[in-house]
Amino acid sequence: MMRFGENMELYNEYELISHSKLADCSMFIVDMVYRPMHLHKEMELCYILSGTCRVSTDRQSFTAGAGGVLLFDAGAGHEIWAVGAPARILTLQLSHGFCSRFYPQIRNVRFGCRLLSDCLSEDALHTLQHAMLQAFSEYLLDSPQAMFACMAQIHAIFALLLQGVPYRVLSDTENTTQTRNAERMHRILHYLETHYSEPVRLSEIAKTEGLTQTYLSHLFREQLHIPFQEYLARLRLEAAMLLLRQSDTTLTDAAYACGFSDPKYLNQSFLKNLGMTPRQWLQENRPAPTGETQSKEDSRTAQHILTPDECRALLDAYGIMPDQIDNAGKAAKILDRLDKRKREGLTTPKQIRFLEGKGFQHVGTWQFEKAKNLIDRIAANGWRVPMDIDPGTYKGV
Image 1 (cartoon, rainbow, N blue to C red):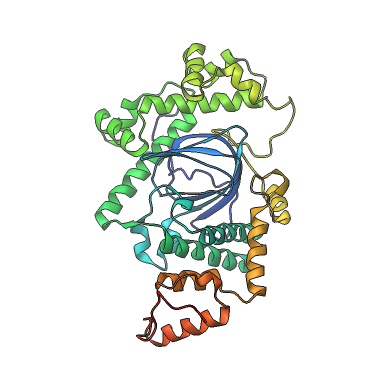
Image 2: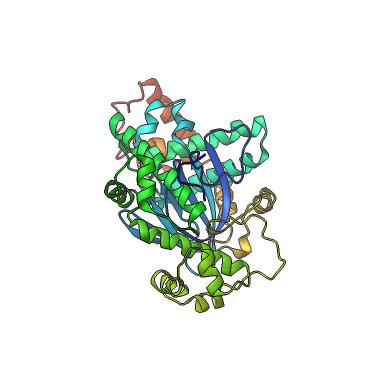
């Protein structure tokens, strides 16, 4: 058995659709069943294309449906369950290195973990959804031209977050401590996710990390908000769910294969975490027929990663499978809305964000040229609103 710490590199969690020229960024679409409490060294944006998810973080639990966008800070623990059918999620993982090359202080910014509809306007949320879809379509092309187009969309996403989402700025010392702890947890979680079927001892992991068992136990709770043994049990449950869903393995064999010392503990884990027995769960999640291939199933998690070709097929529709999505092709609606505003000569989302940030009201109803002329005046005045203009009463006419 490989001991903890031997030949281990920092675990980069997904990296399933890679981009040869775009560093510090990963994008993919996943059909999610369950992902236990975990963290990433990247900031993560999750756009729910279909289905419903239950999300737990260190501070809250909430439910998000199709059209929702979730934001998770780098190093922040979170758990995701699909409610009913698997949830289809477009994911953007973005390291601080992506933006810090241009804006060094970005590495110290923390947004927290949140559902973005709680803090962004409807227009801003639609703009962000469209930017994620456009960035992903460029990301899949993997060409120099597409690389720059993808980067532009991602920078626009980051700017939108900074403008509309509350955040705090860590001191360099706080950031260093958080980064070190997150990297340590990545090493530990990588070990657990590749050795969950074997006997695992917290004392051995602590010794390899140069920590006391008590300190590591507290660190685990602090980072993932769950005791070590409970996390390991959930990891084994997740592996058992995947094994049962994909094969005709018996419950007893699945229990032993996934590290449970007795099948009754697998049954208890299903009841505790899912509120049903393994047999009841299997009735709702039939195993794949024998011999049926799964194009890209993550061996550690109850989730299916779509291949690039599958992703391109979805984006070609540009409604992201509108017949199967609760919000009936929201991507297409977003594009139609933007095109309609352009045809009618109305303000752009960027103009709206800027002017409403200066205190102007109902900017979405203004004409494009009127907004452009006002922004030009503000720019000529050192980006200050001219003294003869009252943003609260200005009508844009």
